[in-house]
View (cartoon, rainbow, N blue to C red):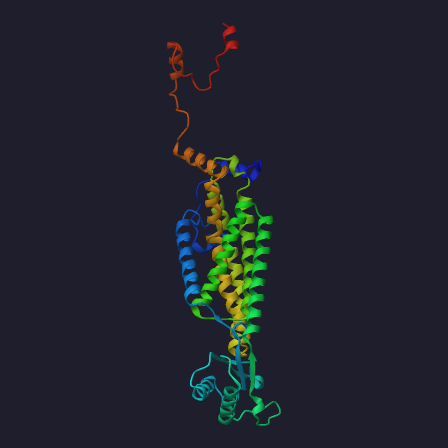
Length: 390
């Protein structure tokens, strides 16, 4: 951007700004993008907060690990129709009394006549499977779809650890390929420093979202992995929007001496802040609706994993695109290259360093009379052409 010619808009940056108008409220300034919130100037604070979030996330991943779903870890899945006399707590109690230990998880899935109680446990052998099935049948007398009381209404499925390992491997490969393609796109779409800042934001969002999942103990399922890929795409979109505005505001700034690159980038962050907030709110409203309607009202527990990772990831992504990506970009720019020199030049000009000393009116005339001193400002240059006239 250092080779860009100054445009009409950028030249206006060097003009004195008009006197400050009436002060507006916080939300009005936020909506119009004129809030002047010190995002870039307070980047050390945001770096510290981001580092704390990242450290907590990495420690949780390293110490607690993840609560892997049955599709990844393997095990047994037991399902029994959720009649009026069946509750998740009752099923868990029967399981624990029969085998001497509790299941991994018990949840209600579905709604109405199709609702079932789903029990996830470690892999059971044939004898344990028969004991649990008999105990549940004797306690609840479940009915099949035709209304007949039968043991076959209780279904038990076994998922091997080998199959779970294959699913885990494929999920990791899919995640790695997605991140790699995203990094390639960022490198092509943006200039070098913006690419670095966007990739930092991308990985921050990835690790913090995963860390929150580990810390809270959310179950990691294939749906959660799909949701994670989705929110990484959202983070990329938000970075494109923010950096487009930064690129627009900083075009030609190196040819001017009124504002620094950091100040123009901070203006861009303010101008896109409300848009990021609005996009995030609009994005999470359907997710909240999914959690309320699909999970709580309809009991579709499989959608909970997809909704939770998207809800967490979109909030973290909105934070990282504004309060991390833009400050990282400015820090890179101000450390190397022409932006660093331009920033020093602008700050030096504001401090009055390097400006020519002002000569009092009439000092030039007195100096010419004595034959010494600096010429009066605005006087004609002295040289051979001037000397030949005398």
